[in-house]
Length: 328
Ligand code: NAD
Image (cartoon, rainbow, N blue to C red; front, side, top):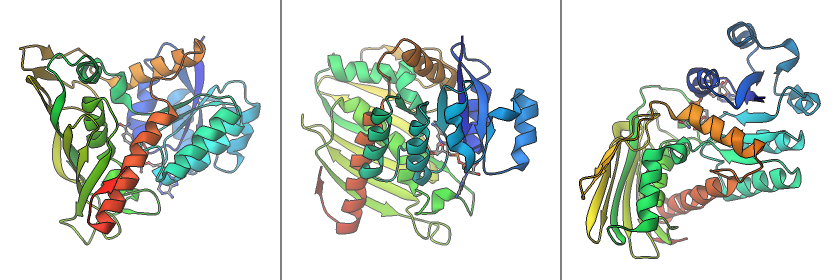
């Protein structure tokens, strides 16, 4: 039997990636939707054969509690809405998947973790790359250290966003590049280091102040890790870039792309190619998370992992504000 998923928010990522991926999964399927846009209902009902009783809006969302078709709620809204819809969702007794970044603040993330614990439901954050064997190779090298300790990490994630109005440009909705691509640059560095950063110094900038009025278009940040490794990270809504390079005591690893939806690949200084075939991460992520629930195992990317990123993001913004180094 497949677990039933209800998607909350039917924007780009739900429409173009997650709903199509749920046609390919073995352990979960699309059963319901929660939308604030009534005109989307007919389209989704027809496309995915959804029952009328499995269609909700943001007001009657809490009634999912009484719906046995739904086992999992997947929150795919702008980041500042993740907390409310996770906390309300957990109270329905359904498991929660929530998109990255988990929420704008550590306090929000903690409230989400607490709500899921209190209601005895699982919480998973949509860091799809941690389900990708290519990125798992980076984590494995960090753990097993075949080339010694990591010394210098370069991690970049960005794309040119031509839109002139979007939540990604709105502070209150959780925008700024750190509310989106920035966490991929950060995840790359954290995965490559295999430990948590102890300090950060950051600089925010924009080349399009007429669009990026309230938030940064570009963030550059440097991290220091307990082992002595350092990372230089870049993220931008103005530059197409997606790579990771790690220089260890006795070798190197390179990935490009490092956080694509699929076909991430790279190589290592010993000649090993990193090229596990995975054209699309989302079906694997969804099935692995559904299986963790079915088999009552820990989630691969639990809420605590989402929070670890936001702790660093808070320090990044503090560094931008103070202009100096911030200890984490
Ligand atoms: P989007 O703007 O395309 O969709 C956002 C949805 O939220 C829309 O359906 C919109 O109607 C709804 N919404 C409700 N209230 C809103 C409000 N006040 N302002 C704006 N929209 C509102 O965004 P998206 O790209 O689908 O991103 C949604 C989430 O998914 C974000 O957390 C984003 O970081 C994440 N995401 C993850 C990946 C990934 O690869 N894991 C990729 C894209 C997006």
